[in-house]
Every structure is written in structure tokens, then in C-alpha cells.
Length: 120
Image (cartoon, rainbow, N blue to C red):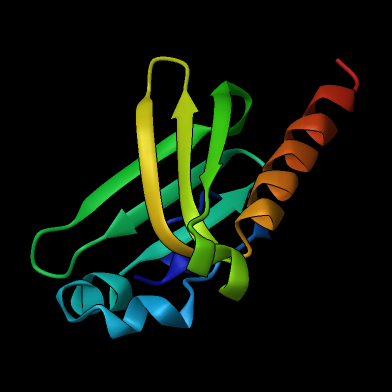
């Protein structure tokens, strides 16, 4: 899905996490991986996947409560992992095979901090 069709006027994409190449070796996940859209903007975290049946979930950036990063032995070696993003009243979004998961966590926290520093 094209991000230009998803973002709102005035919304700025701040970070686009990528799927690890390892994800493409899991045949059952291939279509899902090819039809996945993930981005973090100055306003929200967005995750969408699916081709025929689309699932889209977003969490307002200020409502992100926790970002859990899980990396297996191979994930540490090849720098990929599973990220679980929990939001106030929004549930949890699980992202598998994300490249550089600690960078994702750092970027979301930096965007949240930038929003906190904005004058009222």
C-alpha cells in the first residue's frame, strides 16, 4: 500500500522500519511480508498487512506505552527481531522479522521526546 494514500495532510513520516531479508525465507510469511506497510510519523505508529484481507492498526505516538524487543540468538547475529508495541487503550501490535529492532525502539522514543518538547 502506498504511504501517500495513508498519511494525513501535514503528517510527516519520521521513520520506516524494514523487514529483515530473513523474513522472505519463511514461505508462509512471504505474501504477508510483501504486503506489509510500517511507518512512524510525527503523529502515529502505523502497521498494515494483507492483500485480499487487509489488517491495519495504528497507535497515536503519544499513546505508545511500551516497546518490547525480542531477539533470538540468530536475531542477534543477523540484527533482526520481534517488536511488540503496546499503546494506551490500543492493544499490542506485533511485528516480526524487523531489521535493526533497537533502532526502531530508539526512533519511536526520540519522536515521542520531540513531541514532549514542543511548546504548548
